[in-house]
Length: 319
Image 1: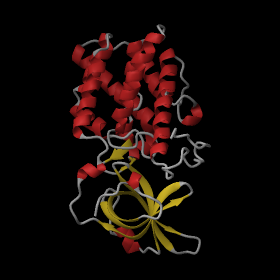
Image 2: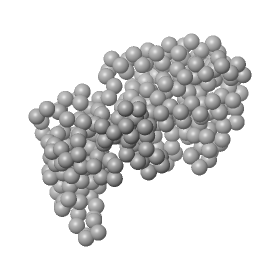
Image 3: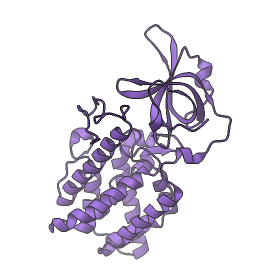
Image 4: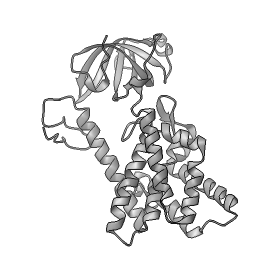
């Protein structure tokens, strides 16, 4: 059977496909009957699948992170595509890993090369030395190439964190010259640092989720911890104390980049670079999320997406 990806499924379409399973739950409906609910995904996206009249054996036959064969029907419900499954079981056939990888190895290596190029172009010697500590850390760089920027929202795919990071860094290089008061080196490094804690906050081998440490601390706290670890390394390597003022400005950009207390930042942005970083981060995340809603829309022939309660609007697709 020809592979049908998540973003290709149509309302009422029968399917018999392999997906990556995550977030499985055995739940009870209002009548007291059990049903199995999970997220199934491929390289193009994810959706909810449900198996009615399920039993414990259906829940136990696979684990999160397994490849599962799903037989059922795609159906639009409340503006989103879902799968009503007749059968869900662990896949016992050969899986083409390329069907589940959003960014190719070649693309990721190209992105890493661009990241290194931008960081090594920084004029500040302390920041450049600090950047080198990150770039030469093989475990960190391996995690960076695999980590998503989120589990469900923007850039929720392997390599999504690096993708988001590079986008912010590229835009920072465009914005900083327009505002001479901004320290371009600080802004660029802040764009690199702001979400690094997600390499520890999230799990991504292969299904996406949260680590225990991530649930307890969050990515901002972990980002500051990672920064301080590298500052200690660079001080040892150079036998020079890292400038305290720069360190505090970097920490501030990490903890304030969500902008307001209600969105998780313990401090609001209080430097020019932190303000710029917050709005650039928000811009990239929102544009990516809106673009994803357009790509995933269940009305391909309409100029408008369905109404999305989460953002309180439809989106014009320009078709």
